[in-house]
Amino acid sequence: MKIEIVKNKEEGAKVAFQLIQKATNEGATVFGLATGSTPETLYKELRSSDIDFSDKIAINLDEYIGLDSDHPQSYKTFMQKQLFEKKPFKETHIPNGMAPEETEVKRYNDILDKHPIDVQILGIGTNAHIGFNEPGTSFDTKTQKVELTEETIEANKRNFDSEKDVPKSAYSMGIASIMAAKKIILIAYGQNKAEAIAKTVNGAVNEDVPASILQKHSDVVIIVDEEAASQL
Ligand code: GLP
Image 1 (cartoon, helix red, strand yellow):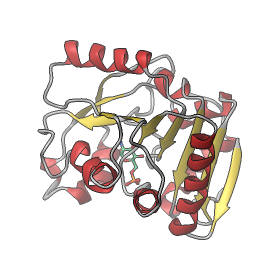
Image 2 (image 1 turned 120 degrees about the vertical axis):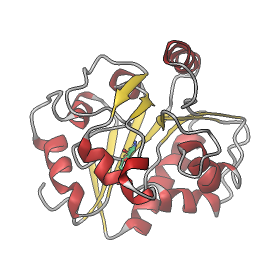
Image 3 (image 1 turned 90 degrees about the vertical axis):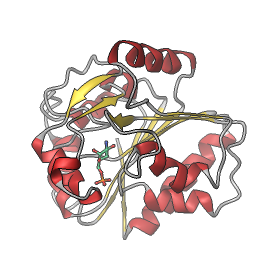
């Protein structure tokens, strides 16, 4: 794992942007994308750059179950606003939170089989979840329906009118799907991510700490600000 400690989210965005640009110059065509507040400065950097994704494919990690794609808090809406409206891709894929589990899981896994991810962007939950793969998730999982933990619902409620509006489940690419990416860029900012980052980097590789599996990947860059790095 390569650790890049940056001063702030803006500098982190620049470091991530350069890695994406380099990968693109070297032929990357499929990008695994993440939601949450963490990648917002990166998406801003991409929006204002002249990078061209019009012949590239974007595959997002996850989506809440039960939200229409045009719901203001859906990850589809987030991606449209943060990136896709300004930087069109040839294809964008996000799980459909209104589709039944049996068909949606297979549909998404087929997309991932057809388009192996070159560069995966990841945030991390305070409990070290990646995508929506909560502690205890098997490292062997592909896309599946997941139940969100209280900690994740609590952390994500800031985006909703009230806690009861936060969906309790989601479709998420699995840990094996994430590990199949050729290159992984994990980004974390702030004190509330410090423990998760320390366990991810220095702790035992253990299903109770989903991101710890990244220790086994051959090309991971972790971009952290000083607060998120404070327990390393
Ligand atoms: C959600 C997303 C994750 C994201 C996490 C952290 O749970 N499913 O992909 O990494 O939130 O979000 P934030 O970046 O807002 O801290």
